[in-house]
Length: 111
Length: 113
View 1 (tube, chains in turn purple, green):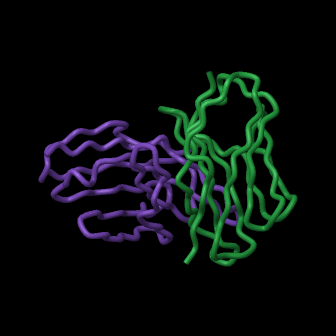
View 2: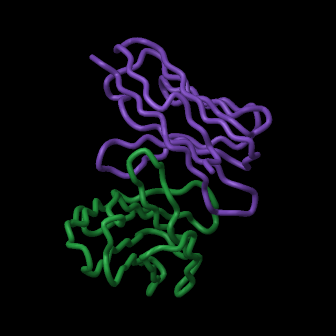
View 3: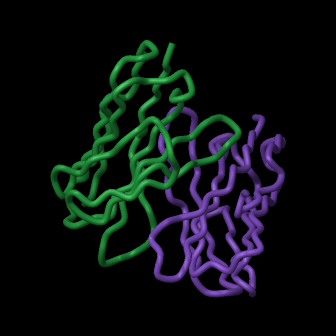
């Protein structure tokens, strides 16, 4: 059973377009992390969201944690080829240092 | 600053051969350490985690084992590799005082032939 469902699994867009990807669960998380992974490399942490309804911005990337702490979204404004990668969301539970990962959103930005 | 290393970066091994992958962390003490395997289309699967020297928890039954001989060293092993052990192996750590998030190493690409 996949605790975190990420959609869409694959997304291809033109440079300059906007995109949003989603991470959904029926579980409540104490925090949620977003990572970006490039082929052959380890995931790199982008952001951690902790509070329900929290919005964090990282340059052109906007992350939102759902009010009920069960879901999250990542919005990229004016996507660049450097945004290409696999975006992974991971949720952690109260008092537990293990993370539950989604399968990822593969994003391809075409120049 | 903290850094995490994995060795080797890539490995090609025949079926039935032994395996030893190493992960070391620098710049922190008493980290929680994790081994994941990433297969195409299946996301990250947690294999083992450790909260201290000699303390190993296994998440799924498998052909692999893990050991933590030193505070900042985590080793993934197998006595006899299977074809299904192929994948991308990632080590990660959490600072004991910070709790979250997990930081990942560069990974090891293992191909079993």
